[in-house]
Length: 511
Image 1 (cartoon, rainbow, N blue to C red):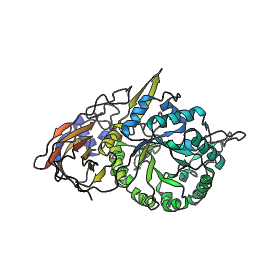
Image 2: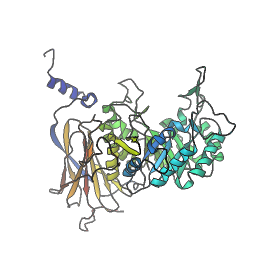
Image 3: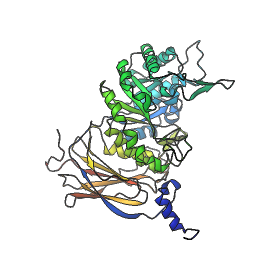
């Protein structure tokens, strides 16, 4: 073997190791193969609720998206949020670490050192205006870390009075209390580290404090426990049984950790790890048990903080087209487990922002990041009231999902996570004879941070409207011998839509 390989041989070796996307290299696509798949026409699982796709903002950063004038909330932001829940009322979560770093000042009270953001009347006015403009419901975090029910109660009363119960979905007490003994909250002037709670703080202690805080808060719905990991979640049923005022069970999920530096760690932020099944189906698998625990108390489970990688994401991973394909697949996996909604966390400067906004004088504009496009296709493929249809397809980099709408329209999404090979789907939908339409989600490569298009439409380098220039274009496709041919290019996704009007043949089996 020669000591030095040619470029083509090197690329072949790298591709064999599954590192092409991670290194930003390009190879010629391999010849397409044909993957057989069939869709059952008997829906399963719960109907898609309204407001399933949501966002999560930090208290201190909200005004950077909305602006500070309640009479003129950023119109680009409003359009982009409406695009994720067309015709629906969004559910917006405001919290994260800033739930425990914020307060409404109380005369004569000096806040603990960990509180460094002061809520103001201006903040309340713009937040209420945001909710009113969207007819949105807000999940608002209240401070638990400060150890003062009075601080939380003051926040709750101010929210109730100035935002109003009409726009408040729930108050969420604290943020990821299972991490209170782990991460520092603040350092004093002498450099001493203070954590939110001591090393023996556990779910039982949290539940006792939740009860105490709940008694001090105004009579608004409550959400919790807002945990970061599965250990405490095993006690979800006991927590909900003790906390009768909770109307929404909440949990936070990230498949990767941007602060992890060991490339051999499965949580290391890389494109191959993000597109691994462990980051989508594996992330969703434990949720079924938590959904059941919540359902036993007649409550929904919402993942009200989620994104590709904790620690504000990873450049070259969280901001790439791979995140769009990951988000699209993961949302289907979450829905299959019975989750009732997901809020994608974002803050200015983070690598997992769905979009970045800016302002020049009175004019707003936004750069729409790839992940947003994936959520846009999910919103099209799984509208409110739709239910999942079982799909039979071989395991591999091609993921196939299907839904049936309330009008019996069948929508099938094929996601090709393979960066080098096209995988065409030979799709059988029993009883379907009408022509369908194909819409694609594409980008120059998995590691692309721009150039994304859905149905040939793109927001471009900057959008001043938050709307696509035109409706996504679709290509007609007719079945041959009862089989639809769905081409899925390397590193892309395709949405097949088959109208529910099948000449009265009763395509979907309702029961």
